[in-house]
Length: 283
Image 1 (tube, one colour):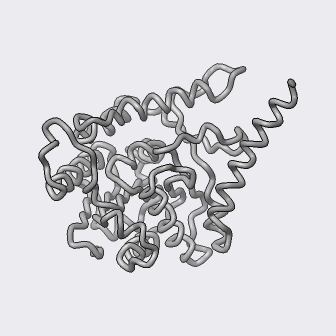
Image 2: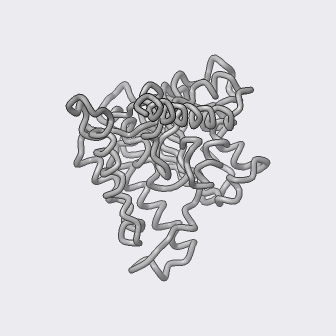
Image 3: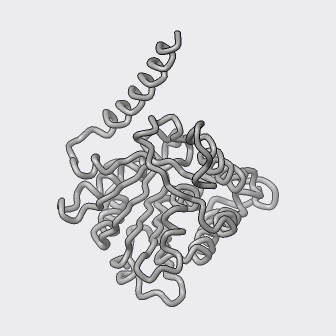
């Protein structure tokens, strides 16, 4: 299995088949921008597949992690050294989470943001053509990180290019750099992250370069999940202890002509209408 960047990393945990066979058996696929995004946004899929012989989670990191903020013992690292650290952290998390396969494509963020970049397109096309996942986890179209949005759009392009019969049945846009609790309740896709809380914490802790380097993603991600579970409904006790929200992107893959921008802004308009109607009701 070869990709366009020479630094691309293919990691098959011990006991798994060769990379192509591992990719082919994927049931849950996450296409993410950076190392640790997978563990933040797609924990439901990781937990759902762990120790299940009929389910297989594959995580894909598209960029190389060169621009990461760093302080403390990581402050003096060059971009090249930081890429090596983050690559090993992602491998560690994949082993802890029992991933079926972990692919790090090592593209610079600038390449992903260029819709004409042949290497990014070819790598993602090869990945989605090599498997038939039931569920695909992507970044969400209201995310505020530019690279996340670029990875989302490149991923949608790859999925939309598949023959209709080969497209996944469920595609989800997940929380990372913007919450999705603003979605109307009827549109929220609930990703139950309650299982194995020790594993959830350990996966996030694997990325020490980010935590010790000045970003407490471990506390923030778990805190968001807990808050989502509690604030989901005001008139019932909590059914889950940890929840990630997602937006359903399946219609965008089923209809490649559909505008991503129009789809996202229509959801925002429905949120606006919900706020307006509630205020008017009690004015």
